Length: 256
Image 1 (cartoon, rainbow, N blue to C red):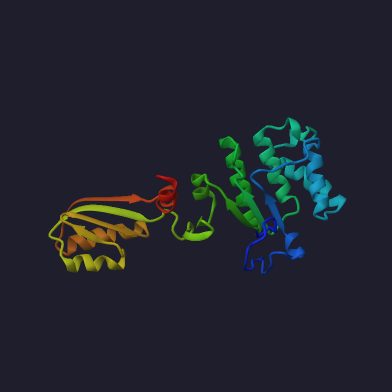
Image 2 (spheres, rainbow, N blue to C red; image 1 turned 120 degrees about the vertical axis):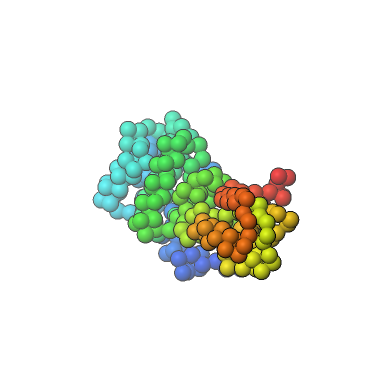
């Protein structure tokens, strides 16, 4: 919908501060679809030159830009090979190159590491970081959550078209921390005092459970329990990974 490929049933979207159907805004966007179909009779060099011309780039600029991008995605030795002879991983890399040919301000990448080996995935991560450092915004859609954790600044979960969760990986890279502790002599007042680090502290017999936003809170929580007269026999923090968070949000509808 943001790219104008699907028409929304209602509402309006803005991209780079302008309505999403603004032609000038579209010129500033790069796009790699998950299921792309390129002209297989073209060579890698010809494909990038063709897309560069579609973006209005001059011949002089393309003479510099195309070889540089082929080098960036590791396809310089295959510049004259036709796409019909490319592997899935090579197609993925040339697809990424075409999305970046005109140095867009906003890049949409749909499953960019699909079909890539570990070396290829690292290459894509490095390219995304370079685009971010250049000043571009990269909108990345992927179900490979380990890649998301390594690459992204912010994560948003979408379920049935609605945003149902988000996480700022810059401010909170380790994610939410769950703590299970075995304690005795912990009073209701002590539990109430934990509210400055956790909104979910609960005591069931000798088992204390809580969640906190940062590992830096853990020694403060433990110190509070002890200084309040509590006896702590176990204190087990566990990070909630992005995958755990995804399963918690999405798992119910997937039979998990």
